Image (cartoon, rainbow, N blue to C red; front, side, top):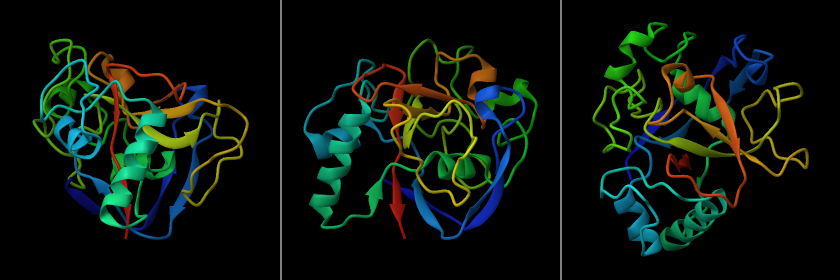
Amino acid sequence: MEFVLIPAGEFQMGSNGDDREKPVHKVKISKPFYLCKYPVTQKEWIAVMGSNPSNLEGDNNPVESVSWDDVQEFVKKLNATEGTDKYRLPSEAKWEYACRADTTTKYSFGDDEAKLGEYAWYDKNSGKKTQPVGQKKPNPWGLYDMHGNVWEWVQDNWHHSYKGAPADGSVWENESSSRRVLRGGSWCNVAGGCRSAVRGSGVPVNRYYDLGFRLLRAV
């Protein structure tokens, strides 16, 4: 897996376009971190787990049909293999911070959804399936497929708004919901469903053919 160093900084998280994305609030990321340059691919999953759960097969396509629980097992095995504890799912805040890449617009490239096809696989150009990672333009920090291709699991529990959300970019976990957060939109979403602020949720045991993940690696 290739990783990109994400610098420390602060940003305004959320949007005023959807109640689930409110309130817009400042988050300060005090330490840099590494984030996968691409969603984890099927080839990378097989190297760790020994089998491929994906419905839409292709070595360089994002792995999909993996539950949040499956991803936790992947993280555990990867850390054990490398003798470390640095790999994990990103927090929702760190995911959005990296996706926005110091932008405040709807997408990391601006507000014009007509340009989305240059950066993302979504319902108008995907052919109703995942596509190999890294084929579209990256965001300003060199991350690919943050918009579209597959939704991505993050570590946080689902909350219906950001009321009470941590301001330091940490994972927001409590007993408010058993569901976990998804980010980024996918190959079957309309353009508006691939915005930087869009969020969704899934049951941690469920598997979907438009849902994968990318990893954070601590510095």
